[in-house]
Length: 241
Length: 241
DNA sequence: TGTACATCAGTGAACGCGCGTTCACTGATGTAC
DNA sequence: TGTACATCAGTGAACGCGCGTTCACTGATGTAC
Image 1 (cartoon, each protein chain N blue to C red):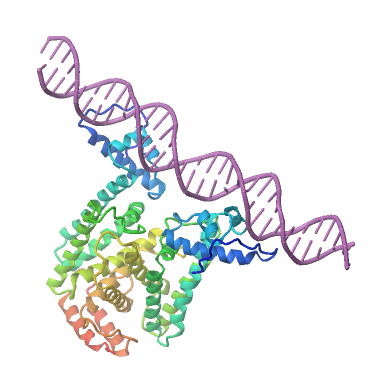
Image 2 (cartoon, rainbow over the protein chains, first blue to last red):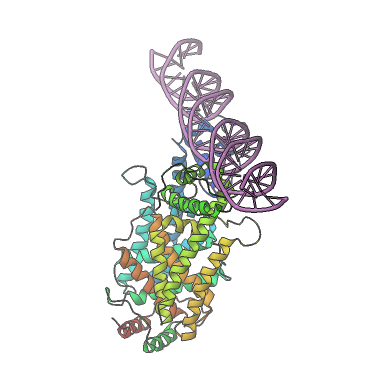
């Protein structure tokens, strides 16, 4: 956003280092987007964008990984907030889950580089044994989804283990985002909205259905005609607004 | 696999360059796995593993990207083959789709680095305008899924646009794999198999259900109690083996 | 009120590394005459 | 049958680049006396 020109920078007073830290984070995120990922991000470019020399960044972050990590932490908070907004704005817990899913997808499509940074990185980016601040932000985000699923269970819309269901729902929306922003070398859906609506409805209703099936049941093979006939009946019951 | 020791290499005769090309590809894939991705792959390491000097690789591949691309091409073929095996071995088209999905997930979990290379790369890796050999291999893989969906449509199990449905199903299994191999900083499912079974059943049955709903219908908000009651009836119809 | 000092944000120059890639070459082979 | 030659897989040394990071420094500020 704030394209600070490389004007001669006024030196911050002692104790005011946080201001520059803030500017560095903003510039880093912006350049992350331009570079398409952390591999393409350069400390030199961050320093230049802020209007400062490169070693100066080391007053605020011990190394490049920490800088990127700090950006990620901030993005996690934004993602969590946009989902929790959906939770707050819905009375019905199933509807809340659906809107949160949409918020999640929208966030991913609007911030593909950041999304990739949070959720599509190669390995477990652990620096040491215990969870980092970034891990905790991610965990908080996941927990809020588990809570929302739990409300559906309490309301009788879903059944079963909330954490497993949350993982399943997350995997589906993550698959949608991931597929759309990674542009694998085969055709992108002609109608992205139709694709998203279809997938999210199928997952939502399918989860409601499957969570009602006896838990450790053997997997169904073919779908019998009686089942298909009842599916047709069921479709007629759903309200169309 | 074939850990060729750095023994003094016998020079191939003119016209036999393909042998070394084959060895290079094998070594490259192995080192790709060890390095965790193409960013960590080094031409020097490939050459060393094969037992040859680095510039020698340039007799077989114009640059590093081409070498990685050639590995990808091969992996696409393996993935396609493992899914088509599932298609061939099933009479019932819905069951075929389910088994293909399982084969897909299994492939991804067993070859995480390669999977990431094929389906989780940053941008459209187009060198020029027209599709590369890798693009065509990916397209062939996707087409085979569309065909399988089409069989389900013909059999009356699914309804609607096969390509949209294929995208939707692919997104779901891709989400599962992607989530499991990327290890985002929140808890991995306690029981991976239960998670996978649940997700794939929900998607399969949900897709069968939603494909029966009037196509461009408004989205359902809350699930009415009548719908939930019928879901219970429906669950009783499904055969358990 | 003036002065010496500690603090610390930011500087300028450079190090050292590993990488992809290039270049002129070598030498064993199959082939044409 | 012998000889000159074209072919081409592989070599050895090096280039040049951009990167993260380090180091000794500078100089404006607030504060203690």
